[in-house]
Image 1 (cartoon, rainbow, N blue to C red):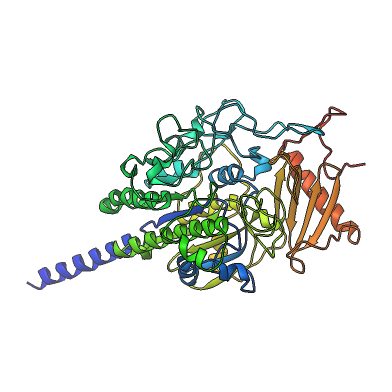
Image 2 (cartoon, rainbow, N blue to C red):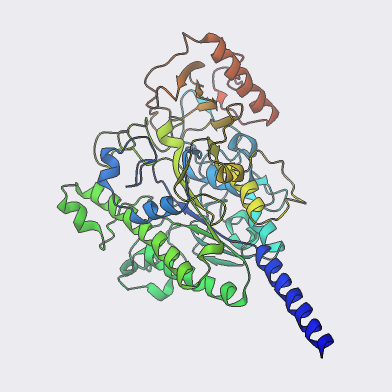
Length: 511
């Protein structure tokens, strides 16, 4: 009898240890909640040291909730426009390296650069990213969702994809490692946000931008943001039921133009005195925020919130062209200068939040600067999946150490932005034919039109209003050399001077 009791005790202890080990080794679910064209100030959660009038203008309670439950990054960066950011995220490479330096057209083999009198087009990869080699005008890389899928993750994409032009492998999320795709295709914005308008899929009226896959909601009063959220929740039912870890790429089309009113929130902003366009913009933001809250509530209901990482990010700075925005041009991201398309802070600095229960301290703040290509190594580290058998070299660095210790800092790292393109017909502040580098508190901007420099100390001048280039020539030389070395190493595309027929000189070789 005693032997039997001892055997039962040993068995129970062994089973308990095995269960505990299994629980400790259980891989986390991961959600990247990616917003389109959302600025650093487009939130009631402040990402600066001060609460501003813009923070008071908007209502994003679920971003506030996520910030209280996780870590807030105050110096998170993307690229000035969308496709370069999305390719950097999936490939782990900076835009100057992968060569997708402007937004890709949904139509294949279509260079989206506007015509220019001074420059001919740079040789950039205008068909986007490709998971297979030898596709013309693409960059070949291994997307991290494929790595997660191969490691046993259930991978889901919902919303905007915009990694490559139609007819190329990168346009299709299934080719990028996703097992489920809802509404992701080659286009970069929705034709319409309204279910009554079939999200653009009306007979004889549909364009490249008509949003696919949402026939269930046609003719209904269901805003696009809500429809995508409902479909994302449906898609997660299977992996949760089967006990599989999942990766959800929740990539909203909001808040990209066309500005349309989300009627659930629009009137409240009109009642506060906002003009029509700004009220529509604010309603798009709050609808996006509700989606975030709905997903977080769903995780709680399913009992998996404590094993799910939620990462919030935007793909570029807030739109500041007016119209379609209201107010004075390039004022919508104050105190940051300019907006979408610009290498000034308003075009590249983003709201970023990370909730990782048990790892990221609730309510913590990370001031270290990070970049969108850091998502690749960070997510693989979170999933305990090695980045083996990839075809590209990785520029990103994991931000996991800053989640574990938000007081860590690294002022030796250099971040680089490269826009050798003409994004808009008219040049604007920091827009068209610019490169930039940040190292520590210093940021250098190289203007390709006249090979001039701007130098700013972001710690003292977040508004980039005091050009210090003439006062710190050694710093200009140091950063210009570092920028040039990187651009040469990566064979970064440069525009062609129509007069000389030569590429624009590198920052260390100017007249």
